[in-house]
Amino acid sequence: MTDLTAIAPLLDQQAIELPSWAFGNSGTRFKVFAQPGVPRDPFEKIADAAQVHRVTGLAPTVALHIPWDKVDDYAELHRHAEDHGVALGTINSNTFQDDDYKLGSVTHSDPRIRQKAIDHHYECIDIMGETGSRDLKIWLADGTNYPGQDDIRARQDRLADSLAKIYDRIGPEQRLVLEYKFFEPAFYHTDVPDWGTAYAQVAALGERAVVCLDTGHHAPGTNIEFIVMQLLRLGKLGSFDFNSRFYADDDLIVGAADPFQLFRILYEVVRGGGYGADSGVAFMLDQCHNIEDKIPGQIRSVLNVQEMTARALLVDGEALAAAQAAGDVLAANGILMDAFYTDVRPGLAAYRESRGLPADPMAAYAASGYGSSIAASRVGGAQAGWGA
Ligand code: PSV
Ligand code: MN
Ligand code: MN
Image (tube, rainbow, N blue to C red; front, side, top):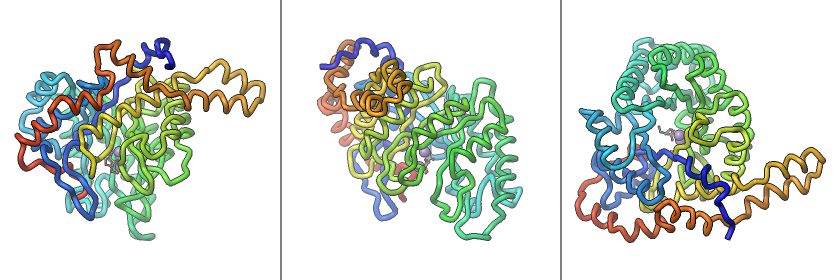
């Protein structure tokens, strides 16, 4: 068994935010499969998320999506989260489910619609005050389907103008986090397609504006760890939305499709100072569980991140730097691969037990009876918001 004692203090710092929408029913445009026991409201989503934290110690916060998680009293939701041993995290805005936004939201040519989208973000910022959230995450569905449909330069200018108005409202301890995505739902162009555009936009805003890297939002073959390195180097990597993709924006379990890619990403995070409580880089999941059980799906996900983090922390940095300096290509590559191939699972089980957590969180959850109790007590669970 690989002894993880040396990296245990770093493992203690790991925190992975869960998306409230991972607990609701979801699917594809072909079918949403309803599952028994699915939450009927944001309070129940938080109760489910708290189960993930209870057995892993890895997921102390829950991200909300407005208006999917709209409630009358956010202070009450805040207290409810605390009562369940978790806190409310990032507030995600939504400017993609309103007829007014068919041709765009903050980039729209009509000032009335732009203002409506900006006002929605102001509402989100007000909510952040009540929930104690630090981050406002903006993912935009804005874009066009056909060349010539709109003036892509003017849209970029309107985007900058709208973001500046939103940024002006962000509190001194809060951050605006801009997420990019190269396609979908717009297919010809999106207004924030890549890290470079997101970087250019947030750099113009100021220090408290940063970029969110969603691992599912790149073309196949993209070297995502290079982007991680570059954003860290520029001081603008604010957060991750972790998930896996095979083909499109699949939102599958992180580390399921390509564990090696997750390792490479986490190695660059560690290497670039993006790991740990004070790094300013937030780890989040952005996933849906269409066919598998949702709470175990989230447990497996945070464990996958923890496993690859442990492997990344095991890279022998000194030996690697020496091999690199000596131009020893194979030795350098071998050092990285040694860490990747290390089976950290027994060591992590021991680590968990040393922290009073179950050695096997998946088994502990299965044994808890929580799944069957919610299946019996909840009828008519809510849809996650996606896949309708
Ligand atoms: C849409 O692609 C998306 O998956 C983005 O990644 C957002 O983070 C998420 O939805 C929630 O709005
Ligand atoms: Mn995302
Ligand atoms: Mn996505």
